[in-house]
View 1 (cartoon, helix red, strand yellow):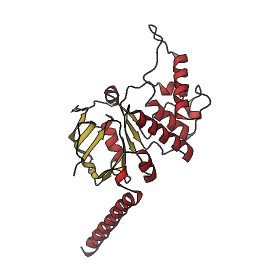
View 2 (cartoon, one colour):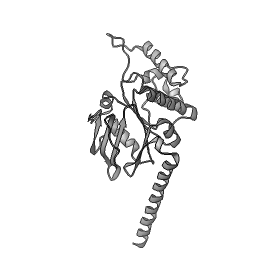
View 3 (cartoon, one colour):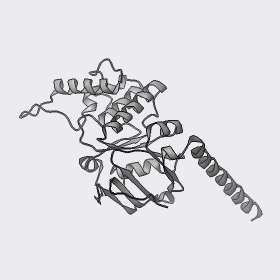
View 4 (cartoon, one colour):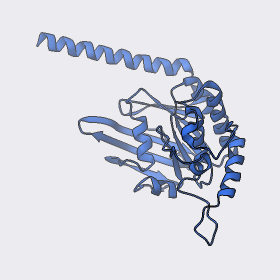
Length: 268
């Protein structure tokens, strides 16, 4: 059953489907996001989580289905169009420019300018970047170094910070934001998400794999299975055990189907 919508939904998708040739990535996805909510998006590898995020971000087009942003039809032409409408995304590949400095990456494609001259306001961007990173709690001693010199966790932190620095986004999509992080850096990003949630300024969808992180950081969890939402619950009403059981049962069904298919081929 699709999750029910509510008047305070800032984002809603209905019956989204997407195919890549013979492969069905999304079959019938129904999902909604409330104002100020953090939604955890779960699913096995290849379940379609990143495909859904890319559709919401304007990076890909769905084959069928509709999307609504603040109650109005939403059909972004591209990522820039989605960003202009208030949806910013941190993709798994980060999309940072290695040769640019930390602070230039933070303001990439939304640089501060010395008006009326078309010159970069580097001092202002440095100052604001330092303040933003200090608030996040990310320890990067120099923000004028190229991001190529940073660790994987630091790079991820910069990518997440960019969605909140110099941005008018009220919805942030995070595609596996903790994938490259150690425990300490991951905890700092979860703290950032908690602060954003407490401020109530943005709504967030996060793809996560660690169920403990999901229950710690998210208000609600949606799980994609077989190209559709198989579970949609407040995190207060589920547990690591329930989420694990769902995945184990999915693997068990998949193995049984594989064995049956092998038996049919053998007898055929």
